[in-house]
Image (cartoon, rainbow, N blue to C red):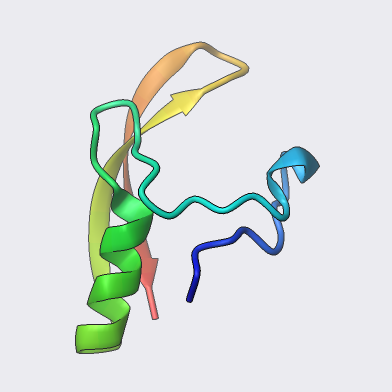
Length: 66
């Protein structure tokens, strides 16, 4: 619940990093929103903007949490 990444399929350098308060490229703290929503509702969806480091494009993404 402290928003520290414990596993990542694409970037092992992210493992062990705390993302509390860190935002997407649009300034939305979506990880904090996921935690708050999960604690309040148990499940839900959150939208955010993803910067693809390989293709250098921005993508709108939706994450389901439970």
